Amino acid sequence: MDHFPTSWGRPRTEAYDAYNTFPLHQRPNPGHKDAFAEGVQRTQQPIVTGTSVLGILYKDGIMLVADTLASYGSLARFKSIQRLHPVGSSTVIGASGDMSDFQYLQTLLEELIIEEFAEADKHELGPAEIHEYLSRIMYGRRSKMNPLWNSLLVAGKKDGKRFLAYVDLLGTTYSASTIATGYGAYIALPLLRTAVEGKEDTLTEEEARKILEDAMRVLFYRDARSLDKYQIAIVNDEGVTISEPKKIETEWGFAEGIRGYGAQIQ
Amino acid sequence: MTSIGTGYDLSASTYSPDGRIFQVEYANKTVENSGTVIGLRVKDGIILAVEKLVHSKLLVPESNRRILTVDRHIGMATSGLLADGRHLANRARDEAYNYREMYRESPPLKEVVQRLGLYVQAYTLYSSVRPFGVSTIFGAVDKTGPALFIVEPSGISYGYHGAAIGKGRQIAKTELEKLKLAELSMREAVFEAARIIHLVHDDSKEKEFQLELSWIGEETKGLHLPVPKDLCEEADRKAREALETFE
Image 1 (cartoon, rainbow over the protein chains, first blue to last red):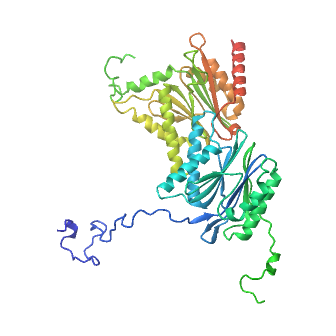
Image 2 (cartoon, helix red, strand yellow; image 1 turned 120 degrees about the vertical axis):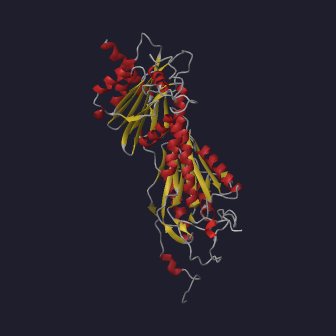
Image 3 (cartoon, helix red, strand yellow; image 1 turned 45 degrees about the vertical axis):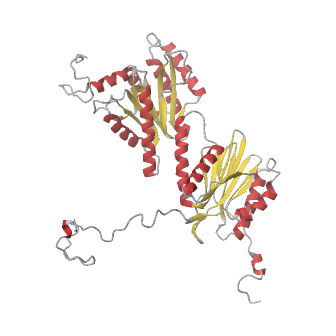
């Protein structure tokens, strides 16, 4: 029996309802679907993404670099997005991968930093602690089969100690004197290793900046999801500074001479 | 206190025949017997100063702080029961966090204070709870500029240019009224605050006390921080000197 009084004495067709007194007496929605019929949906791919982040150690601290592009698939959708983010007074993080997940991480870290600040105990979270926190968050989310789709670099200098480490959507972590995420791990990392390894304690700020700028130029030539606008974050004894966006100087004259790609007459 | 023994003061959920709630008034008495706390709203910031009465020489200096931090830009100083003050601070942190989560911006002090007022007031309604034994001075520099509020045990809250609670509040208030608060710099205000706290402290009656000072404003880039040690000591010394010449 139909237990809904508003259904009594009406035609039984679902499609046609001449007696509806909407919105007062609504009949139970025939189009109702079980919210869980298709199962719980989880992140299966990143949507708006950032490409590589590079990081190197140098004499006085650490340097990170990232371009300012957030792509929507292959479309260069947002061209002025900051992907380097200061956390506390001695740490900076750089993110590639899903930008909305990165923004979520920023709010988590903001909450964490305020909580610690309110203790007023003269202690502050340094890069090592921030990295550990992020790695637990990332691993926890991947264990729920719902990862935050990022590769992150965490860099900082606290109590005279330099710190540079990586954590990704699987919760994988490692630390090295040069690290690159995304496409940069294939294209830029070999260049960085040649330029930096063994010279971490002698490279000056100028030299380190030059190495990163050269690597970003190569990436802009080769990485189809990159942009010729980038920012550099420096952490040294003075704290964190993130530069204004700068243009990469490029040279395209040689392109005319390239043969073997695309449509050509000769 | 003629009403003691009449039975109308046994619970916060009972009015007296002339319309008072004695439990709330007793809570105010708790505050009146505690160390003086003052707050100054000046040109470019806020100063909080506390006369923290130290009941034992065995205590670690700087323990049992009466000035607490709520958010980056919000500080509070309590007079009354220390533990009640800490509970209120935790609630204030939660409220600030909730505001931030909802609106994605740093909470204006007025908003946090109004929510805390509601919370404190709820403790004046039931026979099963006791009203808060603290008055709290809240200070912040938010998007409206410097802001200063007091939340009382009744749950009522007012904004102030200069605020004083606790034992020496009357003398402190008259001193605050003499100042041109809107024209003082934060640095000048630190010295005034230290002077007032020393002035209201009654050497003959009281035990030792420790001067606690914090500030928010241009000097701290909008953060609530303790006044740096050297400045704090200088203010403390100047205040003692001023008192000696005064007497």
